[in-house]
Image 1 (cartoon, rainbow over the protein chains, first blue to last red):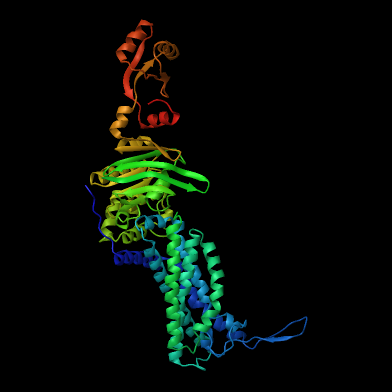
Image 2: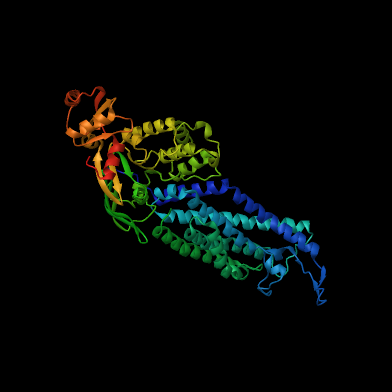
Length: 266
Length: 299
């Protein structure tokens, strides 16, 4: 007698996978540690650079004086206006929200590689013939996690600005531009998440390798962040980063899916 | 219908050929004891059935459908090598994840039921990493049983279990099979397997060398006459003069495997002046059958 099996719809499969991943993320200490770091780092940067602002250091050999240049206003830690010079190697250009995209690589790689390292992937993939459920769920959950980190950084920046008594003046942009910039930055998370996810499914158990690969590949896209989400961003920037995010998530997701289908999962 | 039907399965790991055209038939509702030496291809076959690795060739059908069929796979329970649990999570949360993975309605009740079944009610709040090997194995079994699976694939599930754990395992698997599920279980503890298996498959060097039901095994197992004597060496030499296969077992008994009866042996030895302390007929068990098969002896 032929045995009948209940049909598993796409919605049912994806919902259950999302429940698993959200539960895992919100039960993970590592996620809260990263959130804490995202919150504390901008406070430390703003307070310390403000304290050191204007400090003169003298090179004892050449006698050349260097004046430490801190942030002029709080919003600089979230980016710069599009007319400003891009890609400088000064403190303001380096110590800003862009660093968070690298921290997100740790979140994604540890989160995904832990499935393989713990052996939980065996439970997952035995009952899931379609690997796309896994890729969709991981992308969405890591996007939410990454977005939380970006928002924690912004919150930390506001508090850090207040503590260091930096100006909240908006020069060359307004509140609407700032909101567009923040939304663009959040959308950009999906681009990085989909790349990091692909690196993680390539590396499987080896989270260190996944993080190294992610940082290496992410480096190429690092400069894009300032261009796509400047402080004077407008709805066009939001659409551009949103569309880019979706395209990357779909494209990279398809590659991740293919890797999972073609390689051994244990 | 067969729960698992494998034809000509091959798997290569680089130069090494782990499976060399393995054929296997697991009837629906059976407890299939999958036996073989280390590296014979048991785990590889089980991983292929579970979709964790891809075969190089051959076909694998589960309930008449390809092994990649998502609806069939959704009703599988698995314990391969070690339970797939997150070490820093509690036992309860690990089971909860699996319950959500399987879209189980009312997961709390189901988890409580499973924990009770494997006598782990008191350890629900423990971190998985702090559990002993036996406890971990019980958690793995509970996890595999979640969601009332139609097909259970268990790789060495008895490893690390104490006597009570083994008894629970036996009861659970017999119960699961009674309710219509199929169990594929591999183990090196053949004595335990013998108590529950309804079918056997013996694999060697990536090939199935024998497949049989428990009844067929029972019938094909050699009977022997077990003799206890004081002058063992003399008795053995005397018996060897008349019988073709005379062996000594680990308990100091002499075994005569030829087609004979205790009465005939008693008469023969009495005639030779040897006094018998004890004599009975017996059959070799699965373990001895397996060892004989591996040694290439006639069984």
